[in-house]
Length: 185
Image (cartoon, rainbow, N blue to C red; front, side, top):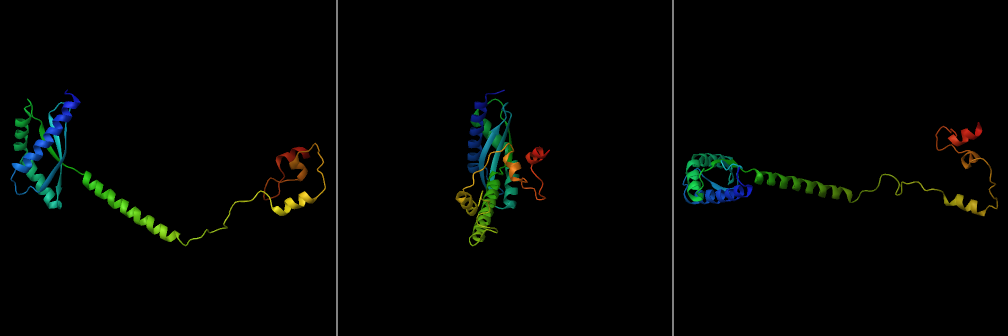
């Protein structure tokens, strides 16, 4: 196994050699505007994958793929001559999908921005469906005033406050609280 740093250096060098060779030496009319985006070499330095993009429609992409496949031998021998390594890696050309994915993501983000803008327009004149303050208040002000004005003093008893007040703990059917039941028995 080779050093990973050596494999990275070789991949960079292969990318440079292949792109320069395609530009200067390969004269195939099927070859469109090809850009070499990346190259990766296996850890044993036997296989190299070269990623490329083509500017154009689907027919130009397909024609460029055929042209690269037919020029693989020339490109491999050029890589061997310029790198000077003992075993020249086999070259495999793969269409790079990163630009397509980036374009799809940009389109999705544009759709989301439009949906957000539409939601903001719909929200401009909207009002809440219920009351402005839907939360319950702990006590009414009128009850507090009545309690403050009275001179009655609460008498302490042995019963808990819930049982003395006959509270029902909010049951709709009026059931007494558990403390009231315990005190009643």
